[in-house]
Amino acid sequence: MRLSLPRPEILTQLDFWDEFRPPRLLASFTAGLLTGIIGAIRGISYAALIFSGSLSAYLNVGVGVAIYSTAAISIVVALLSSLPGMIATPLAAPTAVLAVLAAAIASRLSDSPPEVLLATVLAAIALGSLITGGFLWLLGYGKLGRALSVVPYPVVGGFMAGTGWLLVRGAIQVMTDCSLSFAHLPLLLQPAVSLHWLSGLGLALVLMVLTRRFPQFWLLPVVLLAALLSFYAALWLSGLSVVEARTAGWLLGPFPAGNLWQPLTGANWGQVEWGVIGEQAGTLATLAFISLLSLVMTNSGIELALERDLDLDIELQAVGLANLAAGLGSGMAGNQALPSTLLVHKMGAANRLSGMFKTLPCAAVLLLGSHLLAFFPKPILGGLLLLLGLDLLWQWVFKAALKLSRLDYGVIWLTLITINVAGFLTGIIAGLAAAVFLFVLDCARQDIAPVEFSAATLPTPTPRSPAQQQWCEQHAETLWGLQLQGCLFFGSAQRLLIRVSQQLASQSPRYLVLDCRYLTSFDTSTVLSFAKLLKLATQHELQVIFVGFSAAQLAQLQQGEIDFTAIAADNARVRHFAQWGEASTWCEQALLPPELKVVSLSTASDPVVESTVQSVVEVSTAEATVAGSAISSEFA
Image 1: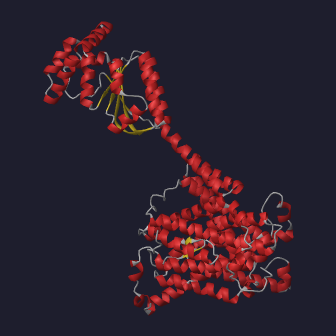
Image 2: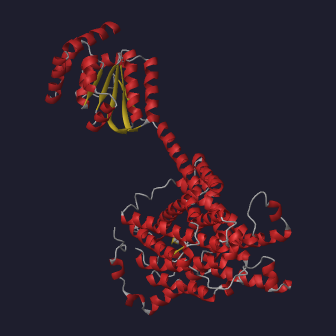
Image 3: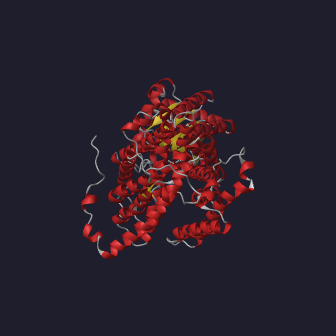
């Protein structure tokens, strides 16, 4: 398969002269600069989330990875997206998976040399981006975007809530160098430690309130700048120096000398523990799935907000190639960013150059290096992570309780808890299993046979005479019929069997008619239920008439050893008619006494129906006469 760009005509149609007109150029530069600053700050916070705990000594390398990824993904998606002005960056959900991946590798290689640990973590991050990029590109290349975009809403909610809680835990880890757990709760509540995470929590709550009340694009960077100035003002008033503040855990660092972006080179490959990375295959697969899920939800949100359709296949290819570019530079996975994309469009900068200019703040961070990072307060990074996590929890734990049923809301909690106890992949599988179970349960509760009829209400192709109708009303319970609709599977088929058994026990009809013309499909369990129904009919001396099975359904029944042709030869109590007119005419002839059948034939106005009735009478004269006499004598 040859790797190709998504819809190359998108690039050739790009009018560079129009993009560089002063009004559009200024708007693109402003929007790109603003989204770049926000992206750089978030990239630093994501790096702090991944490179925490025993990996905190390599935070400068992690920042380089995150900032390079932000720039690479932004450029590729800006050029190849189906939407001019699309902004892409590493996002919270895939980053949370990478944090789990990095922590597992760090725990596994706790006794290994530092250079082995760092090389293995970087290789795992790069491999995750390459796998994700190839997976997304193949989906887009195969035009499978829309087919794979359907995910049960409660599972999405549980995934988002689980991501939110992992971000909250990561934020506490970043601010206090202590994981959020019951074992560490006494330490986290100590005044000297609690002041760190309470500062970040206060900033997160302020940002949540302000961004909801005043949804202006400039609010977030202004508040973060004000928080930075307030931190250093408080530091000056307290008399603490920068070195003392860093020693007390208020600032990032210290960092080793060297560039921030340190991609893997040929010399590093021999230090990578590939076996340890192989042990995390499930987490890497989860990263690809989570990235797909994030992409689908982000694109849906952009479509709703901008009121325009996006080509999901093009977006999959664009993001796939962007992740491949990030992985080749030892970068982390990412995709489209909903808030930044909407911000660019609100600023009237829906241009491809906006995504290009977004890389300028990233380049500044990489050039300034660790000297800039060493002055960045941990509570601001932790507060930003808390903002993202608390916002997800607010949306999918609190607000979802007001608009979802109890069972669907339970799926959210099941997914949330399982993700945090057993990991993302297990949590999503548990959520999908629960959603499928609830769907099956709901389908089983639906009435597969909402229409039922008796001898008096049996639809017939010709009008009945008053004498015929009176006789059928007097003996209505002789025949009982059901019109089956939709999909019949093991749950609803069992309910149908129970319903028939109860009817036989209460009224003892002589004829059972199952109208299957509107039955779209059934499974193997349904074939078994039909076989049980036929045995039940034999026990109760019941005449069973099936109507309207398609050729494919008849083949499926025959494969399950229900061959109506063979059965009819041995058991005259089981019949199948392809057309409803034939079935209803046969039933009426079998029901009515001989003196009323003549009227039926004389009143048949349709030549086709009359021919059908005549053939039924001629072929089954003896059978119909015996049946009619039996009924007459029984109800005389």
